[in-house]
Length: 256
Image (cartoon, rainbow, N blue to C red; front, top):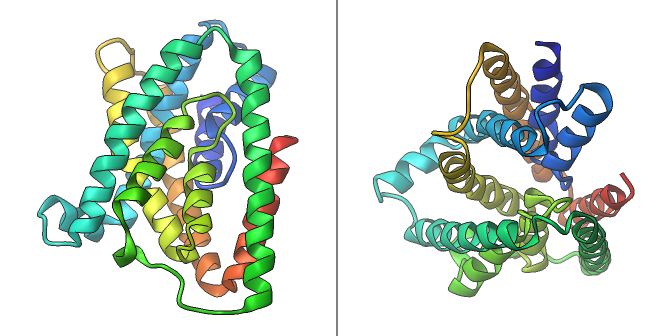
């Protein structure tokens, strides 16, 4: 029970940060709790805990989600989520199948990619702080090339060590979307892909238990608390300084 509580809390906190939540949870489980069932089942449990943060984002953005479902909201967002989910789902599935036996090389390459992204964000932050201009892109400015790019970035997060939120938020920031919309779009993107991932990889071949349900609850509660906190920080911080903070977190994740 304690194991699932700890893992649920960690999942709720790190899901929205530019750190690979899967990598952190597997690391914690390997060092503090015995992995007797094998790595594959451990990854299935980690994916199940993502349903907690899925529910947190679903509740937090319930109005946006309802508008998308009823097609009363911005069709650009609906098309964006549809395209990104299809691309990232297909790419992520293929990458997992192709590189499942190349874990060491993937970890190395993922750290290099993460470091490059962090350095690019540092440059972006410096430029924005120096220029101090407003008028960054908003959700209404989404284009098809944004959808394709973000679909690829989210799909790459299937590789070990790469953070889904880190990749997607970084890409949106580098595309000059404002910090709040970048976070919001990234969180909305997580909804269909996490649900689809659990349906494809877990349901039908995964045994549920009371302990896993407890972990799900803690993941949901802490996910809801941290998503609200991060969006408030994005609203208060100057855009350039927000990007700087995010860049530091991305680069720091390389050495974790």
